[in-house]
Image 1 (tube, rainbow, N blue to C red):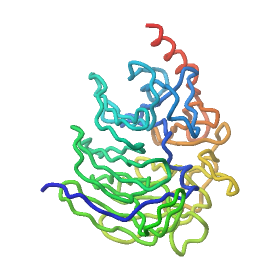
Image 2 (cartoon, rainbow, N blue to C red; image 1 turned 30 degrees about the vertical axis):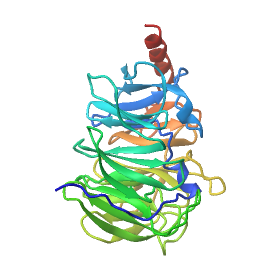
Image 3 (cartoon, one colour; image 1 turned 60 degrees about the vertical axis):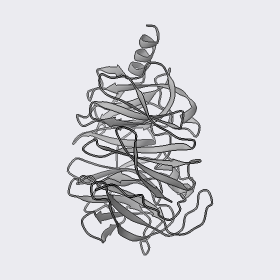
Length: 351
């Protein structure tokens, strides 16, 4: 069945939400626990407002941090790396979606006259979703592409924070009002789109300004840090069923970002920043999904961003000063990869 274009209401992203879903994400994790990371000549991965403009190389780092392999031929302004099987895709110079197979050369999958943000890959690798917007935090369009670069679906007024569920449906946030102002959004909803059937459904209504990321769970649910109507505090944890409408609400705390589920969808990592200055970097916390309010702080070298699970007991994150760090969940066996990335960058550049 051919896919249908969906015309949905406009989007706007609350300023607080920018810290959790921005256009300078530089870290992803492959299916084997290897780390895909963009690093500059100093071996750093700084998350700054203009980070997308800085030349970087893209590297695969083994799960133990011992082996580093470069993917890019020369340093380019790139961001949002995403694992694509044994290959990768990324956004280059903010407006080009680039894909590279394991042994192939990079090729441009899609060009835009606007900025591209937050590519997401379906579990089977058939589909790619990416937001197209004039600038981060303003209204945008969510595009659904295949690996040939054909646009198979367009969803207007979609927020950042989209993801594919484990069964391959595209889940996304959208606004339900018509305002078009930076860093503001009206009440919204979570929608699902089935690429194979071309069927769209509203999963959950009642999302209020400040929504952040969706995260697919292994049991077919979506876990999202969403500010929900009636929830206590600015942000809460919602468990949304991708099979039927409805949600089970839990409470984490104010200004929580970067949700990341473990492989069994039993534990969630997230960062918590100061309510007076919500930002990408914050205290790393761990909570059981069944009791999100019972979170505990983890031992890290200061505030971190973009936490990811490498295995049930090992995680990766970026520190405030741009260091890529791997460590056990208890804070032991910590490995800072800055020197290794710097050396790999220099050795490749000298060839």
